[in-house]
Image (tube, rainbow, N blue to C red):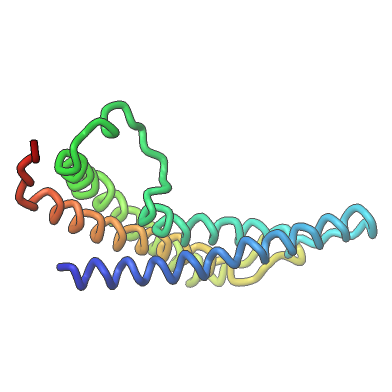
Length: 171
């Protein structure tokens, strides 16, 4: 079980760090776009679309990395006061009942969505826009698949924590 957790954690760590470089690329691209638009009065549809695609990739691929490092949004009314075992149980139930099934549903439907786009050879509707729009649609499937893997790793980790014997308090 620990080997599977480590493999998933390692994969999402590498994917998250690689994706973080897209932020730099996006900043450079936006600066280039602003300079060409406002100084040279020139703008291209492909640049604006690429900005949106990079932004989407950062969040889609980065979601699993954020989840791994507990940097996601959590509505915390009682959780912070729970013991480690209670937190593990809440995380386990939340992952198994909510996150994992949600990820599976999104993967199935986003894959069908991307495949339809691939079959028709969908491109940008804008003149000068990016070709192969299906690539960004497949990124939805990839991002949610990585999130599913991380949810499985977190569920297994939570199960391990929940099953640990309780340590007697030292007085």
